[in-house]
Image 1 (cartoon, helix red, strand yellow):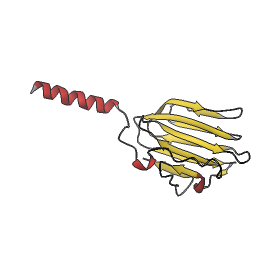
Image 2: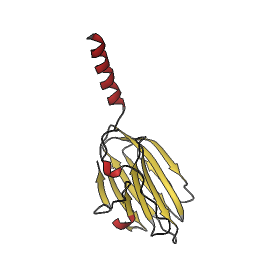
Image 3: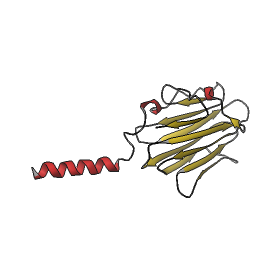
Image 4: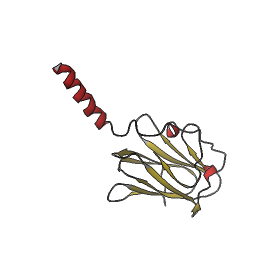
Length: 153
């Protein structure tokens, strides 16, 4: 009986350390197909490693993607990919908000994990205006949010 009790305590402890592995909606799981020759777009997804990805694809003209991502937890393991001059990713002091700006052509990406949180709030712009939702692709199925400001839970 003592071994079973120890096992249960250990299992609960490991589940607590796993962070948000079971908290996120299945709708955000898996990378959407990036349509490189389609209109400029932002893709957002969550993967098996408990990492979120926000990736811009822009091979038509020059566009500026920008926005803010907020969480009720804290961001960690923030990783930028393929950023060029004028691009940035900034995390606030409390580590619960990320501001980003991706400029130019090609692909830019920010990846991150969330600790002790279960909500992400996005506010996305393209060229200084509200980003058209048909250019925002979420999860494997590439669903579009109803607005450029939306929540993922």
